[in-house]
Length: 93
Image: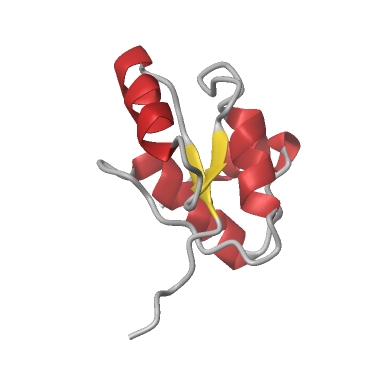
């Protein structure tokens, strides 16, 4: 689902070459909605911040429990920016 040239560009931007990282890259670049990345080591977030640095406002990476999450999300959507919500864990059932 990704050509070698694009994968090479991602690697230059800091995305590791392992299969899970490449799958995350495909999800982020091809998702029609909001992709969920599984990123236990934080490598994909580093790559994404580097890739989207022009679109990420000063608070581009937030935690799910951030008191201002709604405000930041509204601002990012209104301005066409990117917002990364990190640390989303599987909830208790």
